[in-house]
Image (cartoon, rainbow, N blue to C red; front, side):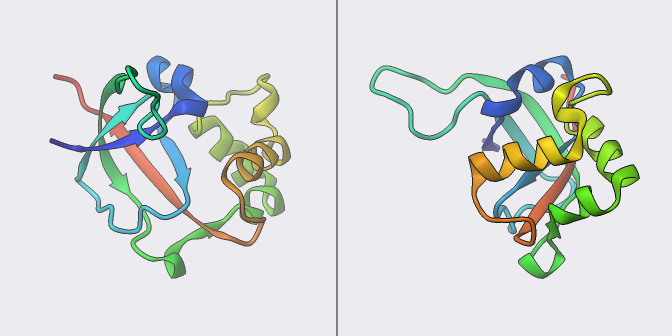
Amino acid sequence: MPRNMSFALTTEQFRNRTKTVTRRNGWWLLRPEQIVCGCVKCMGLQPGESIERLGLIRIISCATCPEEGEPLRRLTDDLKYGFSETTKEGFPEGHPKHWPSVFVEMFINNMGGDLDTPRNRIEFEYVTT
């Protein structure tokens, strides 16, 4: 069975399949071609709650150690790259989180760290069965 990955903050984007990149703290053991199951929430489930699976994804690219990680600062220092990445994160033009600074603030508020903390940029595709 594939490992579960939470998309609690971007469930809608996963369901709409507008998200093809995700950033994580860790996940350094992930490898290209690996299949992962996207879920609404994987940890911190209350008694009686169960995992809601969203679907399978195949990893296209990812970092394999913190030294290969990418700081969030890259999104705000290079706005062309930042806007491209927030679109891949599922926030298209017109969405408030399309702005790299807003996306970065949301990420840090929910995941901790700072602009220079190395993050694992994970690119994936949806697996159709």
